[in-house]
Image (cartoon, rainbow, N blue to C red; front, side, top):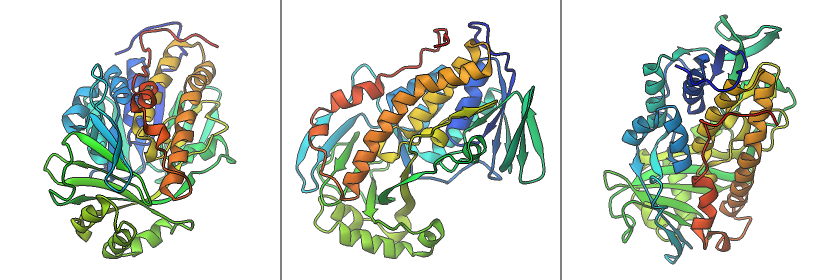
Length: 397
């Protein structure tokens, strides 16, 4: 079950709060490190049918391989090795075919990733408890107890907050912790009819900047998959978003993307029932406290970089594996949490800052980042080649 390195923190059990992407991977990685973890998910069932499409970069796939989940996710995804940057008028100014020594980036619906990770964790013996919405947590010298909205509680040696960008665990660790930061754009996605973007290459994702931004690629069924933004300074609440009919959102998007190549055609080839209202594009600003006592944060709860990075899921997976590695090797949970933060904070915050700059472009408050994208290899190399050195022993400091 475990890989033995160093003296270890003495931690044997963990409560993982949140069953999205980071939660199952954290439980798998902890199990590999000799720590039994139970995943507590607020929703009553697994998140089938929830969420838009996402990309899983080579670095995220490598981290999944550490916990034996890479094959299951690869089977669920579509390889998209290439990328092309364009200006919204049909002109391509940069392209990249992927690193030949790395696997292709995978695209897949978020719920399909959830399902693959959950199934892999269940097969490995990880327990899941659904309908467990955290409301409070308290520590003793020997452990931490989570209290849930249904009146139940659970106790373990440590508690890991993998509960997303609106994390409850984050506010338990630090009541003054910042919340998510709005990026100036409402996000949408959808499927357009085959042929809505003529001349595209299968296996290539296109990013078309200009007066408005749109990303798109050809899906496995030859329909076009696209994502786009609607800039607004005063975003509606989630309830207000839901009250606007899909046909009205589609009409507003068609007005914004009139004359955009190929956005105008893609939106014309999309019906209201094929539109997905994703919601506000958000990111986490720098979180002062990643851990306190026996509680620690992982994934979007502490470093959500916004979808503009293309790295949200991959960074969450990396952090889950790195946390388990530190707990495996260092003598106390406090030393392990501090080492984990030191290893992860510089990388995730740099990626988050870069994504925030791209968000400004999408919101119409910055110049199209042509210079930044003229060398995609240089931009992507430090992202895609990053590896968690699981076989190496972590040392304090």
